[in-house]
Amino acid sequence: MEAEKKIKKISYLESLSSRTVFDENCIIQVSFALIADKWTLLILTTLMQGTKRNSDLQKQVIGISPKMLSQTLKTLLKYGMISRKVYPEVPPRVEYSLTEFGKSLVEPLSSFYNWSVDWEDRLRTIYKKTKGKK
Amino acid sequence: MEAEKKIKKISYLESLSSRTVFDENCIIQVSFALIADKWTLLILTTLMQGTKRNSDLQKQVIGISPKMLSQTLKTLLKYGMISRKVYPEVPPRVEYSLTEFGKSLVEPLSSFYNWSVDWEDRLRTIYKKTKGKK
DNA sequence: TTCATTTACTACCTAAAAGTAAGTTATGCA
DNA sequence: TGCATAACTTACTTTTAGGTAGTAAATGAA
Image (cartoon, rainbow over all chains, first blue to last red; front, side):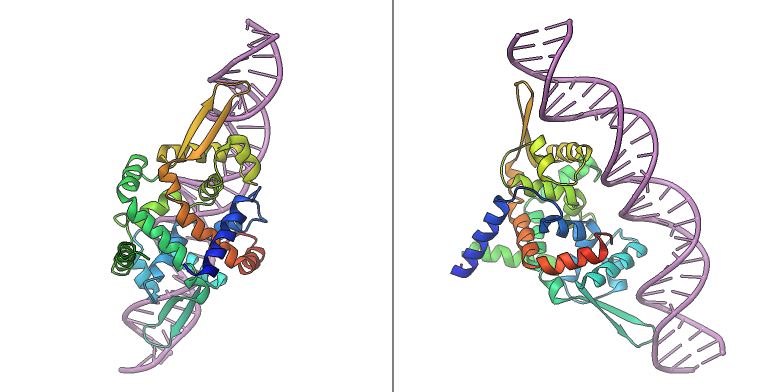
């Protein structure tokens, strides 16, 4: 690891370990409030594969309702995490992709993805037991 | 990066990029269903600082209600992500800490934490605009 | 203007999440 | 047994998430 990166990593850890409260002044609470939900994270993860149409996402993200899909895309647009391009065609075509801001989430999202794969068996067992209900 | 790690990282990326659907058979949907919510992630992040009592968490995780705190801790116990130790004292003392499974979340959670710090200004602007409501 | 299709929105309803407040349990010691 | 306190639970209410179904906008060609 380059020295700069190493220093950055250490400073992150220090800033986390010295934090006494996690309130609205703590950026982690703010960011979790914005994006920590299933559909938001799933859509972002799916868009890591590249540009997708609304109908692509509807097919890929199994279980999401059309309403939740539109709603979540709208929110992510507002956040500036995704961009929307309309093609003047018949029938109309709309494509969504990650902005630079959205792409910055690739690292944490990949990290979560890798973690899920590593602990797949265990997670599935828990999921079956609880049927997804907490 | 060691060769093994590099290979693993590539295989993760391939498994993500070749995935056609994200349903219940996709482990990322399962894991998000289990832990992708604000309080769960915040408590886990706080416990990365080390062992905490119920009252410590109540003081640190600003905004969480006693009910949500107990409930979330109970769920994380069921998941095996945290452990609970009761000290037979007066008044009673209960301590929570991350299990090995819980500690495996340190990497993804740190990654999210770092991302939040990197994009702090932007995230705060969005949060103010939307007042946290999507 | 009419058309077919994708996309997006609205209204209404149900279910789940989360807050509040009160009460209960666990604990060791006096 | 009574006491004092942290931890936890339960009942009730409010708020938010989410589903369904129907409707409307956008589009270029016929």
